[in-house]
Length: 567
Image (cartoon, rainbow, N blue to C red; front, side, top):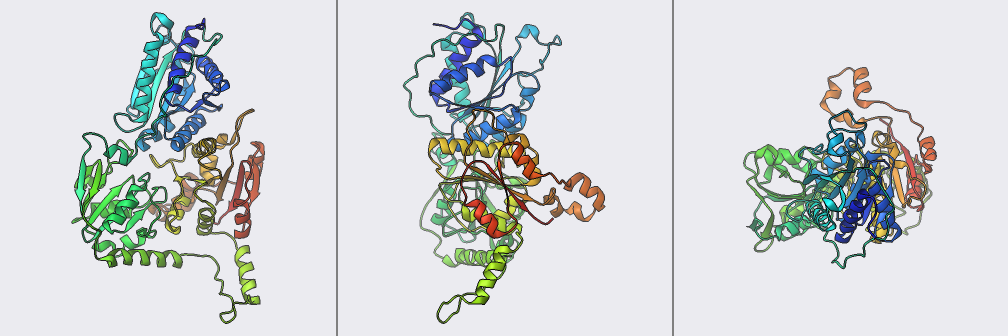
């Protein structure tokens, strides 16, 4: 039996088809104009055909949907009402666009007759995201007289394909739906689920390279080659480095931070003439964002650069100096026979990382019989009780995280500390590096946690490492409403009282300290215990390495770990 309300009928047809195509998660924020979509989503959840998440803040809702899509690789849906609710989606839409994350945005709107006449909660929603969408359509949900179920299903197929990147890069797609009153009615019987194949995840760099017409460049090993793995590069970068016999300069969220060719201390070595000065060819995967040394290398005269397209719609090309930008590479011939080239990089990197370890020194047990001396015990105890440094926090979080866990890093000072400090490990690490903003970091991590634990891919814990300013940019992301799932997640807050990342900029040396602190460092003294308790999170203060290690290995519900750090 068809619903009495055209709005409800349209919503049933649209969401039903999107679910049939593979949508697994729908995120809803409450609102009148989008009520039919929200109520229909609840019915599909009750039928066991989709996972529904409700958030009262649209910005948090959009980043939650983004995190869900990051983990599943298929488009998630976020639904909002009209007006400023739509504008609050913009940060997540921009991140999804620049990072190539599949996201479907459905916004409720007034019909044409109510637009442009001062109607309440009505603005220009169609095209509001500008060029940051793969697909945008303004549609009227007028029922069978205008959009029959077949045409709605066709529309759903278009928006899903655009978001999933079936004919290009994945990214956000926007449906702006004009609903007329009655805005909802009884849903009635849901259509039967279609017998469709499992959804295809958003295409990776390797899958794009396999498409007909993809531009593939054949290369072979050459002296002076390095492989750069930026954000989202994937393990194809590690495979290429081994096949070429080249050093692998892999960022921590590249998905390639492992393997025998890994060079963790790439910044320092690129600044060294005996290493970076001898580079002649650079192969780039993903989107490098965490250092100035990588773009400086590519812009240097005499460097031959090959860029393999990633998820972003914009090709990475610092200074417009890339010689080739291709969809993929094929490697012909054996690795570089001069193993000393990569060996020197790897050994020098390990020495730099070890030398930078600022943990207290602990002498080995007695070298004759291996017995534990009193001095060794005292040194061990002192190390465990010593105040934490950023490097120690990075090391502790990295060591506690394994393939069955998930790691999310805020776009602040701590992600750079992790990138400098940690050796290789094949784990899932993510950060919002499409635009490298701090918006929605909490909700992104919760989305990753919810999806990974629901899919069964991650039976462990999701850990989010971020600074205090990043946390305070989205405290509302901590809110779980009644009936909402609460995943296993730990938020580790490096609490140094403000935005210390700005202390490393040139402006810090040229500006009066009072003005610098007020407008850049932005000091804060928020009571994080009270904040955590207000949102129903467990709170732990970890001032030493032993306290942090214990907190990280204690699994349970949502936990905020407050780590005080010096400025």
